[in-house]
Length: 230
Image (cartoon, rainbow, N blue to C red; front, side):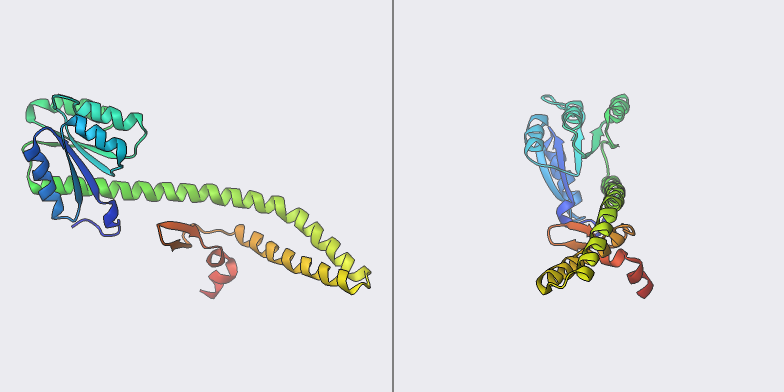
């Protein structure tokens, strides 16, 4: 079975082939692995579906009378889609496979194929997607951390001046209302200062997730004080 660390909702494949029997064969085999398969009989129908929906993995025959596999690859790549493309071909078309791989196909399967080969090839594709997405996520976190450090540096200096001026007001005034307002400003400034200090020690491995697949860096867990407690 495929690794369940990737949500079942992401295990979607479209198979594009002018032979409906081959489409059904792919569907039956991958259904055993809990993968949802959308069938497109012919390249034209495949393009229509791809225009409306996203698929992590696209399985397409190379030889089709309307829009062939090369047309499918071109359609996906021109739209900068992240789908991995697996091409199906007969023994006589191996030269076409080499061209397809150069154009951006991920892998190929030669017809006729057995269930194990199809399952293994699709599993490798989903494994690759998982690694790619994790790499992209870490790259985004690196950019966020760099931005956070820059912002903290830019904010910390004027904040320090503000806190100093506020302390001066507290010491110099006898007006209770002014003193109370200044203390309130100082308390809020200290909270901002603490957040800024935490932003200097962000850790991309310390995250928390929310419904809907949203993930953010957990500032509190990333702080040096929390790491010492752990």
